[in-house]
Image 1 (cartoon, rainbow, N blue to C red):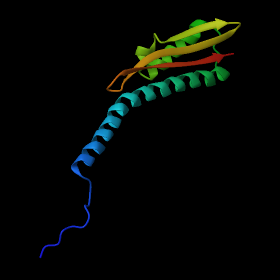
Image 2 (image 1 turned 90 degrees about the vertical axis):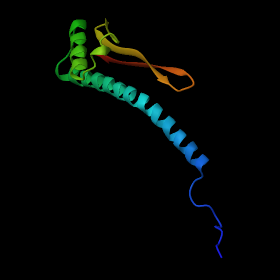
Image 3 (image 1 turned 180 degrees about the horizontal axis):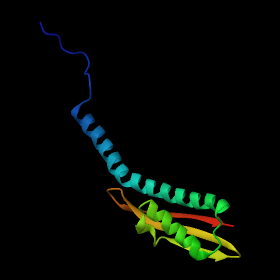
Image 4 (image 1 turned 120 degrees about the vertical axis):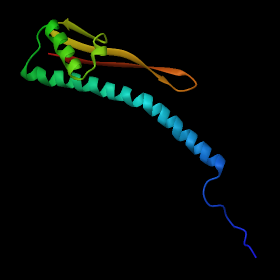
Length: 122
């Protein structure tokens, strides 16, 4: 005689569909968020490099700081970010600030994300 199985092994079809849907949604969000994170890290790196190079090659004018930031953006192939930064000189200190927005589509709504980063050079 044939024996009936005592316990099911593996995942049911509905369980597999749910798991695949969750993984798919995670991949969908990751495809959008990872480039934004990399862009943010690149901006952090640019600001850190400018701050470090300030010790050896000091920037004393607003124009020199603007040129330096634009050169760093071009090196990182981020020419679209040239409108996203400002350079201000107050009390002998130069402040470089990046401010830009990106959107993260969650499927049920579009979530705006605002990035603000700055560095002050002595």
